[in-house]
Amino acid sequence: NLVTDGMTAVALGLEPVEKGIMQRPPREVHEPVLNRGGMLMILILGGYIGIVTLWLFHHYQTAQTLGVAQTVAFTGIIVLEKMNVFNFRSLRAPMSVVGIFSNLWVIGAWILTIGLQICAVYVPFLQRALHTVPLGWKEWGLIIVMALPVFILTELYKWYRWHQTLKRKCITSPSMTR
Image (cartoon, rainbow, N blue to C red; front, side):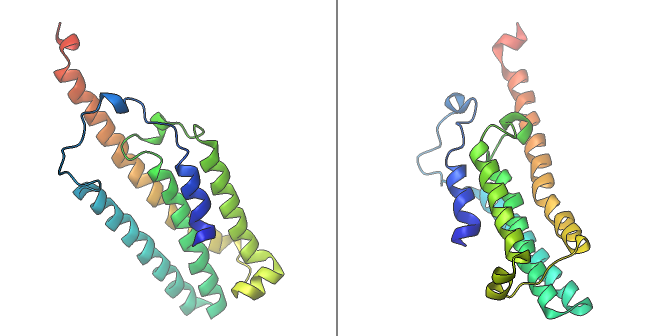
């Protein structure tokens, strides 16, 4: 967990400040740091990651050997978690606003973590230590297809909410009504 989450967590801490953060009103005194929407997002994303990981294991356990099933599930949860990292670069703004390359530390940590996972799957002494087996393109393809919704659906939701907020600001802005 330290290897898979540690680097990207530190890199997220180096994320530039969101644009317009000082124009937002402060939170109410008794408002929790993690509101209902945040808790719901964590439950949905965490639930999806858990269910997909179990499904990947089951799918390959019935069709393949146990080693393949374990390696696909292990790799799947890492890739799913790493897709989720991009969701937390900003809780409100979509990536088109944040900028994909605005925090190169996250990109670097992401590449390094995925690279380490590839090593865990293909480097012989790591295979022995971690009980992994080599995966083929078919397995990697399914893992990626199952991981993409974690990022894409969250981005679509943020994009929709972002544009709804912009519409409200345009309607209520005094400068726009003059």
